[in-house]
Image 1 (tube, one colour):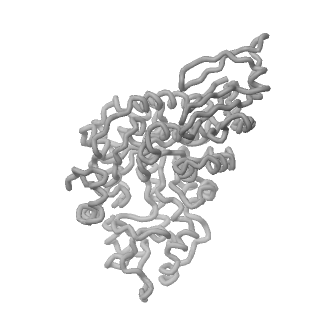
Image 2: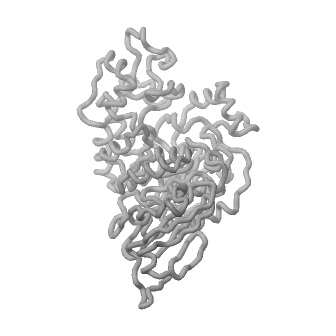
Image 3: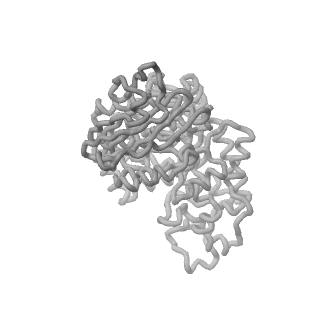
Length: 494
């Protein structure tokens, strides 16, 4: 049985843009055929990004600020004011937006997903709320927010609202002007946020926690320590996430928690109860293309770390994979490395069509694009492989290892990354040529079984859909000979 959330494939859609494309105004009207497609592509979860109620202040800001207009023009040259829908990360309250049909429509959508074996993921944005959120004008909630000190000589005025509340931010970037920063050193705020987490957990199966590391006591102190000390707040003795996750699971024990996390804080969040964390380091190594660094990173990560990782080659924060990786061939090879490792696979809105048109989260549509038939076929095969028990049940009878290094004196082995996976009686070898030139190598398979007196049996390669008769003793002693095209992927079952 797989650990919670691990070995599963997750499909992210920008919910309002998805509904606009489908021409529907409620989740009730999303055609069953759209969910059937996800079932056919072997998805296990759907992430409706941007599902909760937003305010008018952030929308007005998005439609008026000149610097944002330039970004919209790059993403959608013919955009109109009606295309600007506001940031899904400036939430007013955790009620499903009327644009999706409200909480009742979400409940019915969740039931439709469950019938197809799909879990439903929703966002939770813990660090901040919209400036016009439900708590903004409530005197009882005044101290839910970081506030400007009485002697603000050293404070940046751009980081505060006229009423003294701070805008949300992280330690390294400027303030987010459509948000108000929450005070996690305030026990009352923590209690209110647990209530919000319980509210969200009641309507979904999986939660994606935005910028989850910002709530760690040390990060909150790093970001807002001066303001917190000046207004009389100090760090609580416990971490918010450890307490909150335990309380949510006491009521909803099957809830899966996935953290967006950076700065090497992923392992710490897993220790506090998260099932999955973003593996941004793998993405960065794939984007840079430095093979020694890529292999070094992959080989340095433990099986347990990989199992708790969410791997991706694009999402709503990153460029489209075909743009970042300079074409579909390299993008597809990067996806194979990411998704065939232990962990969770995160696939973004129309990624399997090799979509190059960026989908800005503030917009309801993107530029027109043509689907790449070759990439769609590639993902159809890859997703079928990922549905194999070896890739979906990484616990009982499971083993993951690097093969014995091939002889570097004979082959361009530096171009290749490879690993073996076994699950009970199933054995796989994954080989990826992550360079722009052909390469070949032999990989020894010490666990190749003797299937017949002659020692011969069939090795199946999934991506080409071919069977190869091979001698088990030869595979164990000398290895499987792999001839790889540039950006080539081979997945052997032996």
